[in-house]
Length: 549
Image (cartoon, rainbow, N blue to C red; front, side):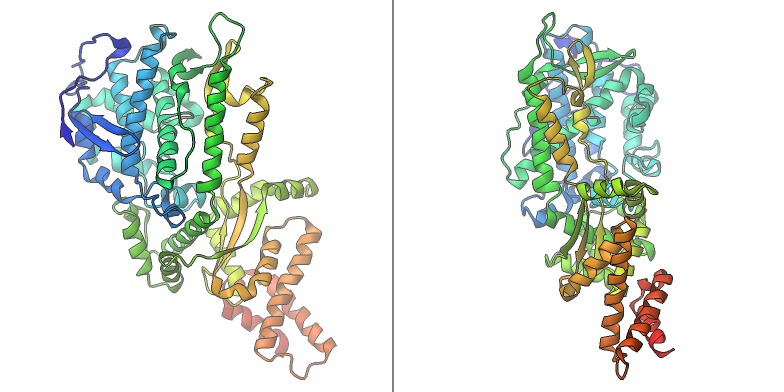
């Protein structure tokens, strides 16, 4: 980093006196310059430099932005540290765009120095609570609460007694610090409570925001995926009141004219399309999902056994976590991580997509299929692990040899909710479907993104000889239409009983009818004792007892 002495921007391009009513006063002068890929020079003031120099912020150097994606795109090694600085840089570009837009009135571009500083520190710190493989362990697999929804974690990193919290209070004073914490802890369902600071949340973390605009460019760059990321629409940003509070808005309608800015709308559609393409090629790449599922399966088992606590992850990065897991006393955890590090990835054997689930829901009236899937295999990590081990145990495999991956079903892209000024009113971007040109494009992109969802199962390659039986087991577990579920239940348990009877010689000297009678007894007992399926020795004992009784 190099020292400079450039003055920071002031609202509307006019000189504004520094405010010294709180803390040390708002001093936006550049103190250090950091040069990073994608963003170029990122200018930090003294407050921000002090934050970056803390051990809590430096820890972000050890957390990859894209988790296990490096196993697919080897150069996807950029970190939360890079992205946090990049988000600050992008937020500053958005502020400049708002202030310099010649179509904006004084009120529409007015941002105080206090709000400027709040935007800057919020952008810089928006990911401070991230843990190793955070999106996988939190959003995808629900092992831990999201970093920005975990109040204990927010207090740990930003509370008044934390390293960064003390710096914020020293420089900003109590009043501005409390405003910052209100923004950071904001409930998305009650954003109006932020009042005059709501647009700050919009700029950094809402829909078309600094966070998203930075990571799209950064992920493309480090995955070497070439997409048009012009962001020309930034020139049409402004602040507009909605329900008496300012929101960040894109102006898509020419003032005083009955015509839309279709070129700007097309730019936003392209942004939606780029986000979908990255989802398809990167975020939902099958090998990346497999690797992430292996990490989450290992962490969940280590957490359940008490080897890893959430607070342990506040101090470490990706590689340290993998080291701890690889040295686990539990064979299943150790095997998963050793295989991951050798890129010996589990193989996808089963997938149930959105269309299949929706078709099944049309046939099943007594349960909510989507809610059941979400509750059992997304929201409840323990339930998901139990079902993984039931299938594995029944098929004579060890814990972790079969893994279930089930992301959130609500996969609509949040950037489609961006506020735009369209045909005289404020509305979400996704509601601009009345336009004959871009409306159909919106529908296609949003539906395509939702269709990336599926519930999947991955199998240890060492057990691919049992692939068909494992698929039958998945069909039994993930199917809700009663006749179909009953058929796969019989197939699943029949496969289990036949395999044990063959390998243990239980069918010797039994006539066909006698054998079928014993099989029927064993299947009935297995179906009634589902919890025992978590242990392959218990399964074998149930079958043996059925044949010898």
